[in-house]
Length: 276
Image 1 (tube, rainbow, N blue to C red):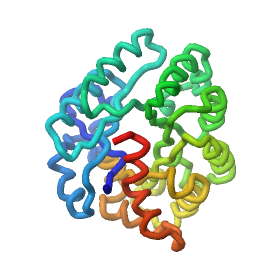
Image 2 (cartoon, rainbow, N blue to C red; image 1 turned 180 degrees about the vertical axis):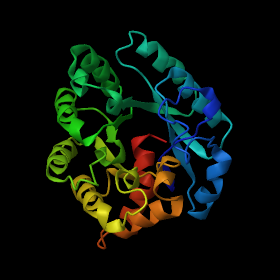
Image 3 (cartoon, rainbow, N blue to C red; image 1 turned 45 degrees about the vertical axis):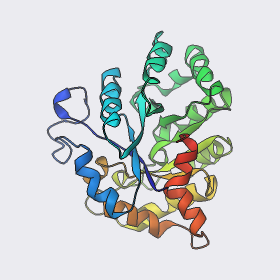
Image 4 (tube, rainbow, N blue to C red; image 1 turned 90 degrees about the vertical axis):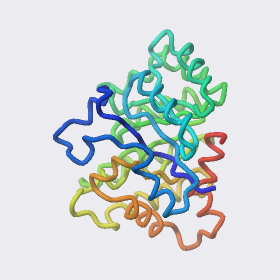
């Protein structure tokens, strides 16, 4: 089982992708399953996990409906607003789709990430943690302190950090990011996606050595059983094509890792985390 644990599909005319603007020429067009099929086939991937790209219920419906008719979509990570009193009803409705896996919390988009420590938010999240729902956390490196505090309140959360928590690669940030990631890795149900790192560097002049310290750190902290490969396609195209993303990760894997550890990274861990 080989899985791309993190990628997106979108149809621009739907109109709720506020961050995808015409000035981002590389991304301002439709990206659908037929556009990714050749890359999945080339790298012998059984399929992918499609993650929400817009903070709307409608967009989650869109990708869930797309998944129903697309064999290569193994599952969908949707969107919920835990401050919405109706979040449970929305979750229950999404569960009617066979490929709905869980949802993503977009901490990145919060102007004040301390709001995730609001008692209402914690109570809602604890409810999903008690049901062992897989939850993605989209978080920036400077929001990790609040993320650690959240996990201290909800220590049984079945969660995964997207994109290595977006360290500031161009600025050479390491110490604070590493300290927080070390704390997060101590929670046994927390995973980390090796995804989205290429777009944190210089899009036109990056080299593998820019990212390897971050990849190595995550692989060491979380170990071979709690890390997942994700391409972050098509967002990755701003800095690298699909082949380059995979090559970067393959070159960064510790030489002591054998076939089983590599298989875990490239699929089995995602299968386990998302209960495929």
